[in-house]
Image 1 (cartoon, rainbow, N blue to C red):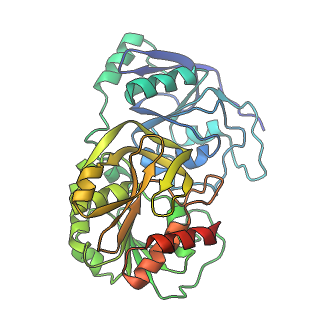
Image 2: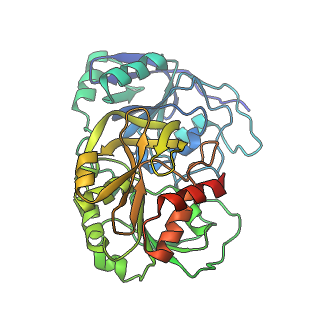
Image 3: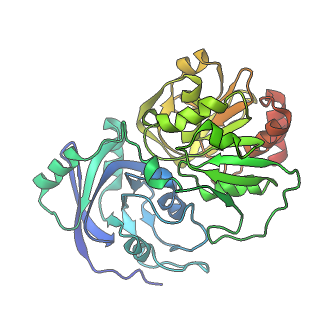
Length: 393
């Protein structure tokens, strides 16, 4: 099917004064955000609907995007969250037996601006050398100087709290038939109940939990430890989400109150918040890790996992180890912390997304490890992690 759209000029300006001129698709108007890049070859629909991208304009490094359209099934939240979408070329035709509409029509429906026809290689190289930058994307302001001035006055991701924009308004119980996705309910065979702190959780994380036979109650992050415990959970999960973990004291506080009372598992932002709850520090990465091919070494098993990632902040290793954390995973590109467990408490977390399955299912065993930790109240041993990983491969 054809992706119909009028040809309109659009410009992307960065805070360093660089301006890219291309063609717009999707919505019209002006938008600002942190400009980042993602190295995935596919999965643009999952990227668009990942709440962790709130406040960011995403550049896809793969040159041709939109060829399989958009469907109502492969979404990670109720709507797209990106501030803008930057690509080299929009596929003129889209074709997939599940496709419901084109990428351009989808972005237009949710008032998100896309730009194509720019040199995304040059943009990505600039972001790798200079780091992620603030930017402005517009179809209506085409004066370069005005756009650059707007980019320089845009909000900075450092110190930004975007969780408040994506968190749920109230608690709810998750079931597998939510999010236009239904493959049948799983009976709660073990009678286990997990409370998930939703800082911008991806649907597939919650799916992975219920698929392992547990009941999942989802709570917003701005609650108290008492609010968590009153649900009488067997375990606690802390989700991914957008923004700077150092700005989220209200999400750290309830975790501090339950550290010694529940088995806890965290992913991405949840990993950072758990580290902060233990007393560790976080810092902003130069250009972050965003893509489906990030190599991570499991220090317990010695195996390398190919992982999907989306984050711009990381946990400081020295402060983590001083706070009782044991590093379990490292990124093989820059050796930053990708996972840890606590020395004595039933707590572990990873910086990457084990639910994303970017082709391989290398990291899905971590959900199995969480289930076992809930039952034993002991951090998973290196031997057991290796066994669980082997069972999933």
